[in-house]
Length: 222
Image (cartoon, rainbow, N blue to C red; front, top):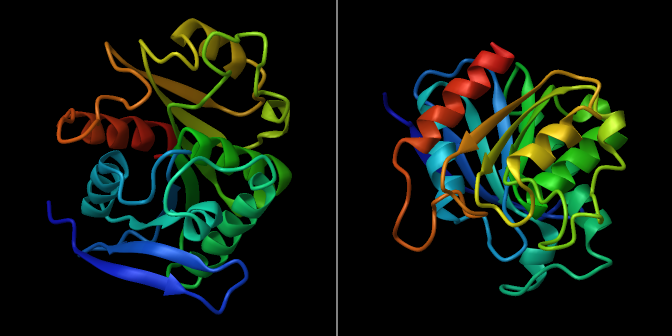
């Protein structure tokens, strides 16, 4: 399968601005997905690139974008007050990508980006038909009592969670328990032996994982 073409995407007239890369498939299926990155990364993260290419090869229009906090600061984690602005950036990205396609739109990301995507979906269910959440940070490492699940009962769209069995932000069992709070259909893809990076660190990566993610996603969403 061909992944089509990749264009630099910048919409600086919007507030907040949207910046990233747009993957245009050779044979579009009308569906689109917006993906974003974790707290210490950006939209060029190898995991995001690999997943975007896999989805584009299947016909999805894919936008992988930098959150507003990363557009302001090229390195370092988001600050405590950044979250609402980052969700606004994701909302604007969805609004813009909606003009580029005609079918269902999905939303997701890695770690912090996935958490903000899920919070946006809880606040505004009409934003996306479903979620792809890579390494959802269920709680801070070694602090299992600080669960980040308050918005889960408000998620009305289906969600695919992809999680490493050695992720310090949650064990698979902890995540399975948390998913019972979500009233919509969910699916968990466990990645054996992977940590929070899902095996994508530096120049190393799990070549088979993007295909597995795509297959699980299509099983859930059809």
